[in-house]
Length: 460
Image (tube, rainbow, N blue to C red; front, side):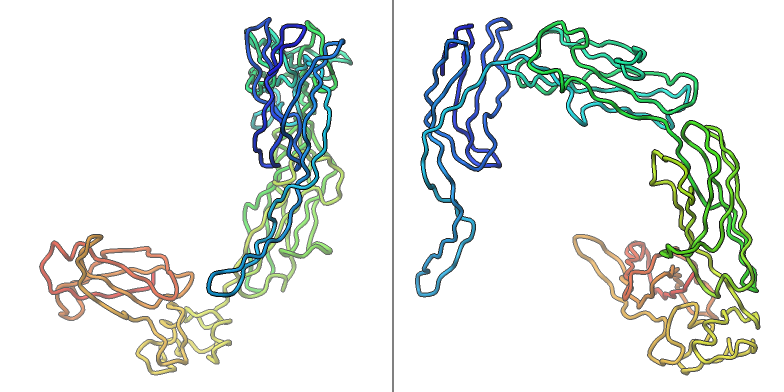
C-alpha cells in the first residue's frame, strides 16, 4: 500500500485470473471517500509479484516488481508398480526479471462497444423504443453525477437531443454498473436513423480520453419479411404458390424480386416475381404458377427468397427466406395407397383390390401395412403388442404395454373388459407419438379397476 501526493491510497496485490497470476490494484479517492473497484494492471501469462511502489515528482505511481516467465512443459510421472503417465501443459517458473511500471491516476468515463442498446419491435413511427447505455468508469478515481445524453442523429451534425440522464452520486473508479435507460417514441418520417449515446456530453469534468465516450446504433432501414400462404399442387405436377412479403421496417422499398427455388438449390430459381412497392408496414401477396411436372409425386421442399436482385440494404436478413414442403398425393385406383407406395412394393396402382390383399400372409392387408409403416413383404413385420405386464413400483402401478413403432406415426390404445364380437373397446389414450423402435405405455387406471382387460393398438 502506498500514499500519494494528492491523498490517494493505492493498494497492490498479486491474484490469480484466467490468464494467470496478475498484478491487481484498488485506489482510494479522498474526494469521494470511496475505493475503486478491483482492477488489473496486466492480463498476460507472466506472473507479477513483490511490488515496491513510489511516487515521482509529477504525481505518477511508479512501482518495481518481479516479472516471472511462465513456461508450459510436459511432465512424465513414474507410477508405483511400473509404467508412467505424461501430463501436458504443466506451468513452470522460468526467468525472473525486475520490471518497472508507471501509472498516472486518471479520470475517464466511457460507453464501450456493445454498451448502447436499442430495444423495440418494428422501429416505425409511433413505436416505443427502450434506449439503454451502460456508463463505465474506466479511470481510477470516482466521478460525481456523471451524465449520458441520447441523440437522434449525430450530435456533431445537428442531431436532435432525446434526453439527458444523470447517474446520481459517485461512480467509483473501475465501476461498470451504471445503466441509464429511457423510453423514446419514434417520430415521423419513416426512415432509417442512427441513435447516439454520449457520456459526459457537456464535459463537466476533464477526462483522460474522449475517444471512448460515444457509441451509435443504426435502427429502422428497410426490412422485408417473407412467408408462404398456400401451396396448391395438381395431379399433373403443376402447382400454385401464394407468398406474402411485408416491409416491417422503414423506409418504403421498390424494385425488389421474390424468387422460388427447391430447397438447398442456389442456382437459377424455378420462378421469380416482382414485388409491388411496399411502404413501411404494408404487405403484398405474390403468386407463382409452376408448370406441369414441376412438383414430383411425394414430398418436395422449397424456399422463398426476398430481394433476389440485391437492391436493398436489408437491416435483418434472418427473415428474408421461408421454407415449406409440398406433398403430392396420387392414387390412381383410389384404394387409399399412393401410387409411389404401390409401385415401390410391386403392387398394381390401377387395381383397387390389392389394398385388401395380404402379400406376406401375416394377417395385415397391404393397406394396413402402409398405414402402420411396416413391410408388406415380411411376415414378421406387422403392428403387434410385444409385451403386456402388470407392474407395481415406486414410480407407477398398472399395466405396461410395449409395441414396435415406426417414425411419423401416432397411436391409439383401446381397452375392453370382454371380447364379445370385438365390442366394448373404447380409447384410453390417443395421439401417442411414435418413439421408434419401441413405444411403451402404462395404463395406470387398471390399478383401480377390476379386470380382466383386453387391449388393442391402432394407428391414427
